[in-house]
Image (cartoon, rainbow, N blue to C red; front, side, top):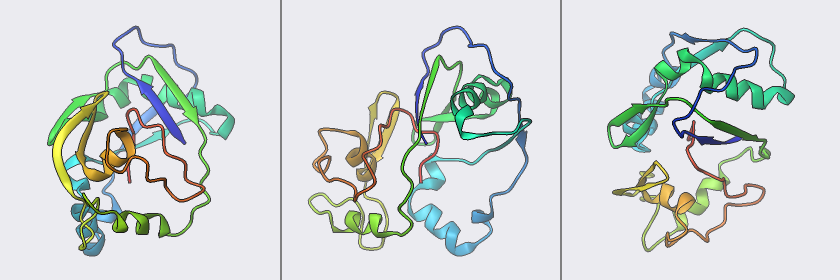
Length: 181
């Protein structure tokens, strides 16, 4: 699902029926040395962190709008969840005015999507060793672009913005991603 999250500081929305609690967990990816190496190589170590939450109601897809509105309105979530405001810099999410949820096609089940990224040159997006090509931080609507991949996905001025992801993966409408990867 894609989400557009507006973080204008306005009054808190009333919640629905979902209540959330943070769950203490250690991600399995960090226990596997090979996966941890990839996590670091792709720059996730410095620009992301993982949190887990449980909720108290049965969830079905038709409840997505209420679920995510309740999630971001939750005091528990707001006190735990942060967004990147630069390299190694984080700030709390704060009140969220609006959440839009859109279901995306998820029929790609192989890694061919990433092969296209390895072929892009001048400037490259991915190095021969698989590492993302970094760049100076640029800010677009509170989103920090610190590598050529983010620029390709978000900035219309990017040298590679017109490179289309393979079908059926449309360009994602990124405003403030909750999860990347």
